Length: 276
Picture 1 (cartoon, rainbow, N blue to C red):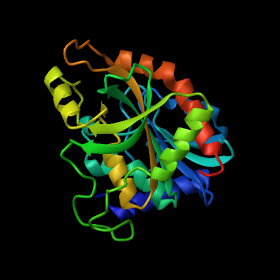
Picture 2 (picture 1 turned 30 degrees about the vertical axis):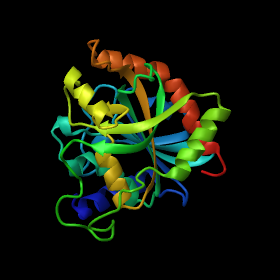
Picture 3 (picture 1 turned 180 degrees about the vertical axis):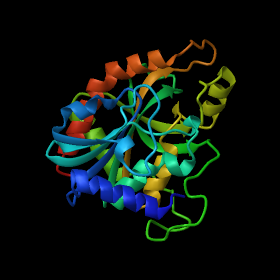
Picture 4 (picture 1 turned 60 degrees about the vertical axis):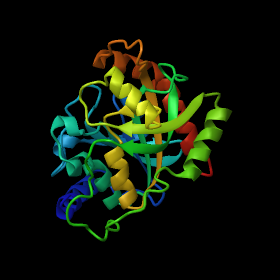
């Protein structure tokens, strides 16, 4: 688990530059190739991760590496454009540094997005999926180590990780916006290698509909802090175990780029819903 003093130092620095969030501010994490949502923000102000004390660096292509504050659909939004991964060599605690920072600043609602491989044969490249639950296959937890009670309990409940209320709002907004929104279970793995055909079959047997290399640790840390969470996946490739096709980062970025407009429109509609 993070050193609380490091998180406090980082949050104070961000507040000194971007000012404290409004009472109902929303935090967001943008996944690989999905950073374009920052361009929709009104009155954006930002700070590079490299200028935040104790903060790690985003090293993966498609992750801009900055924290941006602005307004979207009338909401005060703190947006992490770029995240951290276990495969970059970061500890589970450092992977979740952005989430801890947002929580320390008083933000209690979080939207996480990611680029994911599709496991459900119904899905197509470019599909959007609301995450209903997840399977953490990384073998890691950001809660390992001494618990910091002000953040949350030693043994946080995970029976409703993703908010049913926010999921319902997302479904209604997708329907009214004519955006097709699938739903399903996200499997989190360490990576960075892509899945083999045998691994794809195993993940399907476990009940997963999509697989990716992020999100699950961040969500555990967010629930530990009592945040209400909405998770959205952009399906950038579909894994068919009997006819696997080679997938590269360039393919993932291209597919995410094509779906980014629909994802941004959906997130904007969700934030603009009075019930959110």
